[in-house]
Structure formats: structure tokens, C-alpha cells
Amino acid sequence: MTCALPNLYYFDDRPVTEVDRAAALAWETGGIEAEKAVRLEKMDTKQAKFTASCLANAKMTEEKRAARKVAMAAMYAEIKDEKQDLYEEKDKYERELEHMAETDVMKNVVRNKIIVIEEKLTKDYLQSVKVRGDEIPAALAPMKSRVSYT
Image (cartoon, rainbow, N blue to C red; front, side, top):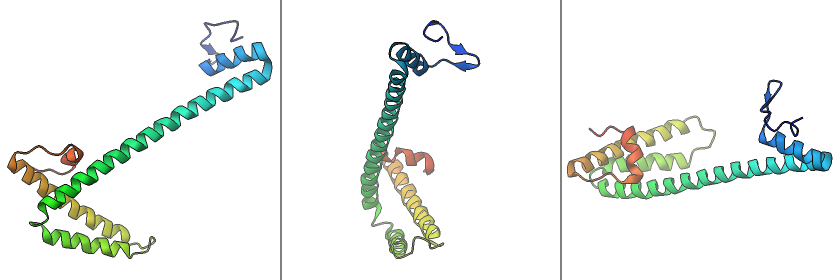
């Protein structure tokens, strides 16, 4: 029916998709084996597009993470002398975290303490950038919205 009615967009209450139309045409010319081959090909094409999209997203995320890591290292190096006490505290918690078992309940508490210290350091850095009148590095721009530096 789909082959005979090219303007058919709904069959009963279900839409007629591109896959349905291609499968029907393949069935008309080559039988059930041709229909299965077309459906499999369309499914493989859809899966390949999805996989490529996921890989591209993962690559972009990793590139941004690497750029942010470099920018944060530069940021920390710039303010390390004035904020030595925070750095020592952060290092202490990171060493503590390394020795904790993955199932340790306190692991998340220690991670949160590290995050709080990193946010304090970031806030201080962003304030120093504002005082100097410099531009915030692009890799750190997302943090500007998370940490109020006014």
C-alpha cells in the first residue's frame, strides 16, 4: 500500500516513515530479503550517525577539559604565593583522598572540601583579574557564572 500511495503520510494512526517507505519499495522489487537488508542498512546508518555524534561530543568535552586544566594550572600558579594556606589544605585533602577506599563514605565529604577550596581559589583569582582589568581566559569563562566575583 505504501508503494502505491506515495502521498500516504499516516497509515491508521501511525506515521509512514522514510524507513517504512524504503522497506516497502525494496519488498516490492526484491521480496522479504531485500526489505530486511534495507531496514538493516537504515538502522546501521542511524547507529553510525549516533556513534559519530557521541564521539564528537566526547572529543569536544575532552578538549575543553584539557584547556580548562591548563588555564586552571596557570591560574593557580599566579595566586599560589598569596594563597599558600589554601594550597596546603587542598594538597592535604588530595593526599587523604588518594588513600581512601572507593567505598569509604567520607570520600565524598573530602571531595566536597576540595571543591570548596578550588572555588575559593577561583573566586580570588577572578577578583584579581577584575582588579587588574584583564580579560578572563576563555577556558575559565564558564566558571565566571558559577562563582560570583563582584
